[in-house]
Length: 438
Image 1 (cartoon, rainbow, N blue to C red):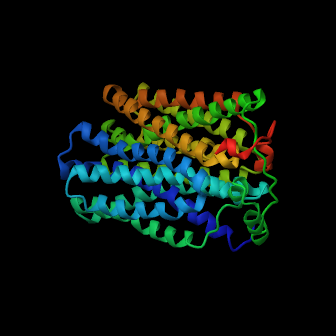
Image 2 (cartoon, one colour):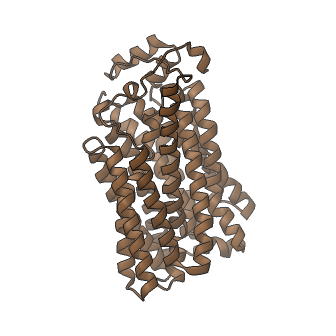
Image 3 (cartoon, rainbow, N blue to C red):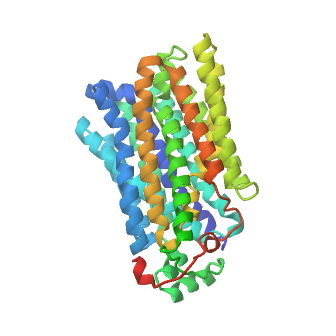
């Protein structure tokens, strides 16, 4: 890939995933101030925490289907304006109702980008380092979550809480503006153009940007081998992403509350402790970028799920057995988050971009995004209930079992995509008229 395109492409796509991490967790960091501002009930706080997830569920499905039909660039160019608009309306909300609606629309934009960005990057990346290019996108997620807690910790320390939450919400608009500028001069995906029958334009872009040659053909969905192969891929992608988000989002959204209620930390200690846990995610994701094309996707996901499960199991056992020093729990959670982002936190978002043909790639990512949001919603509700009844120990124990399930599912259904072209991974067992697929 031509060097002038590579960094712009990475940053233009990674910004929105970082904003997802920021926006999902900034509500958690601001929850106490929001409760005071709008006199929120317990149910209202749940609505607020889950509103962004619900919006991204819808955005993923709708944008994924749309972008497979009209092109990557048309939707990709404009969805960041939603980030800007609804970050600002969130920050300026005079009532809970307006705040909730703003978060839902913001979530819609997040889901849209989840369906488009990995597909777009995969279709430009050479086989030899596609894992690195895609890994960069998911590195931005823990960076976003960490920034949300670090900035919240700083701003809430120096600004009155009823003003501070508005500032941290508004800050999300700034990187979105940068992303809009970065995306202005990006080209359409040549693979999508070729898949839609616009071969001359697609091959011209391949020559211009010195990309890998593409020989695209449509797999026949009526063959038994096709149906079985893609059924296994759906089980792998939907199952593992559901398990991951159920455990990680479910715990992450209420982690500061659990740390405070368990007596391990105070309010600010919970914010800084959660920030440290998310720093572990940055480390894990950064290392994964360099290992994806060397070790492979499947091994990273099995190991990442497995060690994260072990760490959460230790947290459950230690907090149940006796009083334990807070730094020990934070350390175990940090190691767990490191391994979670080293494996499934990175790989689950890469698999759907590689294991489906171009004309269905964004749709697959959109469906996977929606299912991952269902997992996050289920985890937040389940762990919120368990936390009220038993605290951190049973929450960590259930999360450990879920992570173990993800490791087993990857071991059974996982496939290795390292160093293979997208066309090879989706080689047809038969070819038929393109119009049947549209």
